[in-house]
Structures are given as structure tokens and as C-alpha cells.
Amino acid sequence: MKKPYFKSVPNAPAPLRGTVTRSVRFQEVDMLTIAWHGHYTSYFEDARVALGDRLNVGYMDFYNNGILAPVKTVHVDFIRPLKFKDEISIECIFHYTEAARLNSEYIIRDAQGQVAATGYLIQMMLNTDYELFLTQPEFLKDFCARWKAGTLS
Image 1 (cartoon, rainbow, N blue to C red):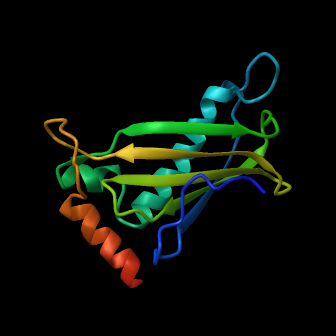
Image 2: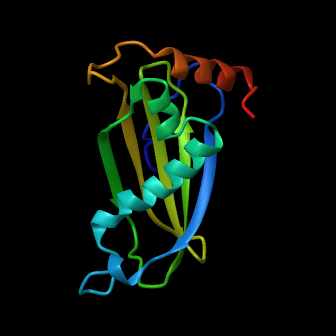
Image 3: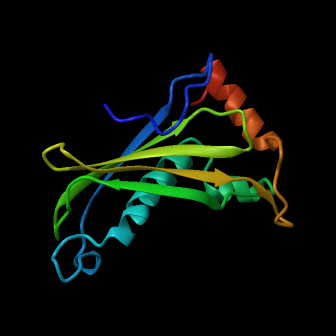
């Protein structure tokens, strides 16, 4: 079993999950006819945006609350190649944290359900003057409180 990307937080609520499906486009493959490695973070983003929007913690939700959420860290583990027209699913998993950041994990599967890649992103929180939040901004704190209470809709 692989080592978890994020440490368990005592008394944390269950991770939040969402999945999107799409196919590998011609423009995403290289001369070896496999999906170019640089596109995998874009696949992650497809799932991250869908889950964030569903939970009302998408990029524009943060922005409208005076918060910028740029990527601080990205990591991808490549397991098997994807090819042109492959149907894939990308699962985004939000992991609970009380820090001023978002922790998201990703699993890309092919049409047979085999894992093609896994990875994670860490997004930091900045105000609109590009200053780092050292504690959770109120918008994120409220979201995490509802997550922990099990009242997310």
C-alpha cells in the first residue's frame, strides 16, 4: 500500500470526494502517442473545479470572499500511460485541515478502472494584497466548521 499523501487529523471528518469523466484529447498527446505528463495537473484541475463548485468553495467563491488560492505544491505519481481517446475518470478528494490551506488528492483511472496516476495539490491562502493568511480566513473556517458538523449540502 502506498504511503498516504496527507497525515490523518484526529477527529477529522471524512474526506470529501467528487469525480469527473472526460477523454484524452489529440492535443494532449505527444509524439509517443501518450498523454504528455504536463497535462495531468490540468486533469486534476478539472476535478478540483467541479468538486469546489459543487461545495461552494470554488475559485470564484474564494475570490468573492477576498481570498486567493494559488497552488503551493503539486505532485504526480505516474503509474500507466494514457492515450488519445482514452476515457478517464478523475477523482478529487479534499482532506480536512485546520491550516490556512486546501489539501486535495487525485486519482486518475482508465475506462477499466485501473489507476493511471495519483497525486496531490496544496493551495495556500492569500488576501488580495498577496499576503499569506497565517490562520484560516473566515470563509474557509466556516466551510470547515460545516464540514466537521456534517452539514454541507
